[in-house]
Structure formats: C-alpha cells, structure tokens
Image (cartoon, rainbow, N blue to C red; front, side, top):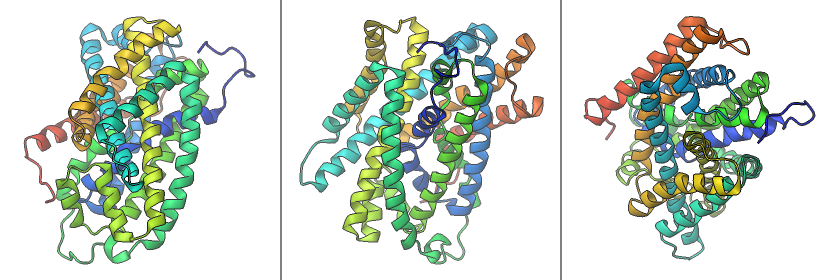
Length: 414
C-alpha cells in the first residue's frame, strides 16, 4: 500500500477500526469467562478496564515512535534504531513468539469450533483438518493485500456484530441475577484470583502488530490512526463486558471448573452455554458467531505477523515476495496446529506473557527514546513521564504474575 498523499485517496476510518476491532475481538474472548471465573464478574470488569486503558496507550506510544519513520517500517526497523540491537533481538523474539502462538491458538480454536459446527450438521470433520483448511483460506487472503484483509475483516466483523446482537440479545434475556451475583456461594472469595486474570486480559487486547500496518494503510495521519485505536479498542471492551455478562449470568461459577478441566477450548464453552439454555436456535447463532469471531481475529493477527516478517527479511510487496512472507507466516503455526490441536487456553496464556515485552515494555521505551531523539514533532501521547512509567509497570507486573502462576504460586479456582 503506497503512502497516501491526498485526502481524497485516504481510506475510510471504518477500515482501520475494523482491522483493530477485528483483531482484538476474536477467539481470545472465549478464554475470558473461563480464566475469570475465580475473580467473577465485578472484579473481572475492573481488570478489563485497567488493561484496556494501558493497552490503548501502549499502542499510541508505538504510533508516536513509528511516525518518525517511513510508512512500512515495522518493529524491527524502529526498535533497532531507537533501542539498539539487544532490545531489538528481545523484542523481535517476543513479537514472533506472540504472533506465531496466537496464530497457532486461532488455528486450534478454528479447528475445534468448525469440528463442532460440522457435528451440528451430522458431519464428522476432524479438528486438525478443519483448522488446516481454515488456515490456508486465511493465508490466501493475507497474501493478496492489506486492503483484502481490511475488506474481508469488515465483512466478517459485520456478520459477527449482527450474530453477536442476535445471540447475546437473546442470551441477555436469560441472565439470572442469582447466577451473576453468585448467590449460591455466599462465603465465596474473589480477590485472590484477580491477579491471574491480567495476562489473559492483556492477550485479549492485542492489536499492536497492526499499528505499523495502519500507517501503511493511512500514511502519516496520526489523528485518523488514533481514532482507529480508540474506537477499535472501545468496541472490544464493550463486547467483552457483554460477553462476561451473558456467560457468567447463565453458567454457574462452579461449572467453569469442569470447563477449564476440559482444556477451556471454544467448543466446550459453547456446549456449556447450549446445555444451560436448551435452545436450538440460540445454539446455532452461538456457533455461527464463534466461527466469525475466530475468523476476524485470525485475519488481524496474521496481517500483523505478515507485515513484521516482510520488514524483518526485506521481502518486497510483489506477489512472489508476499508468497515467501506467507510461507514464513503460516507454515510453523499450521504444523503446530496439526501436532497439538487442543492448546488454545495454554497458548493464549503464554501469548500474554511474551506480549508484555512488545505490547507494553518496549512501546514505553520506544516513546521515551523517540522523544529524546526527535521530540515527537508529529504526535505525542499525553501523560508525560508518569504515563510511560505506568505502562512499564503494567508490563513488568503482568510478566511477574504469569511467572508466579506458571510456578503454581498463585491461587487457582478449582
């Protein structure tokens, strides 16, 4: 996509919003009710709001630094120039790990939900085969162009929003206050389980790989790109709140223990909701929504990985160059999806750990270094030094929480 020089040629705001919103709102949202069942509804809302605030501002810090470079320059170029080779290596490994593991997670999720979808039609298609075919279809769209991803994401997100309101409009009518307020467990404790939700919240607001893609799409237009980030992340936050409301208002808190024990994949949660509601039409809508949710985030995440790899290896934008980038983007996670088709919940958790580096710590360092060198003439995130320190602490805190959780040093709801 060439740098845009006239207002007339500028793409619509909607295209950027759907790239951000579509990337965020996807399969990751299905992990939230499972991992937040310990903290339950109100504490989980607090964790989501805090994470949204920090992740929005870390994305704006990436934009601030990126605006000092050519359109098309991704993390590799910016980090190497501003922070040096050491940080660039650490950042590059974390970016590749997060985007690859999220791509793998969405292949796992697409396989399980398509398997469930075909089962509803009395067809037996293995999760491995379903995930492979889905990944190849996404690979073709990403290979075509950023514009093709935006168009397809807009279609998928539109369908997802329609099915979302059809599904959750009905589900909201089934919300039981006694279930939502967990009346059955009058002596229940929630705060001990709050910390372990944070890495999953962070992973569920991941869009940062798309900030350089938006600069390719719009050119150096900080006002439009900022609006894309604000509206896209707010859209995600709103849908997450409704999603927690309808899941935690329909599925009793103790039932999530069994869902987590089964791996927490999408099909298990869909089956649990279906069992509670006992409605064939709602079950069908939920299955359709699940498919669109996976598709939209799959497109957005793989676009971010595609652009990062193209910048890292210097592949051009010709069909042959994009084909080489597509091979590097999709082959490793496809192999992972074929070997380990049920690793969705684990993958989302580890993505949250690595994402703390490139979605929180490195953006804060980039903004700080960018201001020292360039003075950020095009755009500067508000809040000054305190905002940079907050984002740094947010990233470091998330990493510590995940490590404590990995060593079983945090309480687990079971």
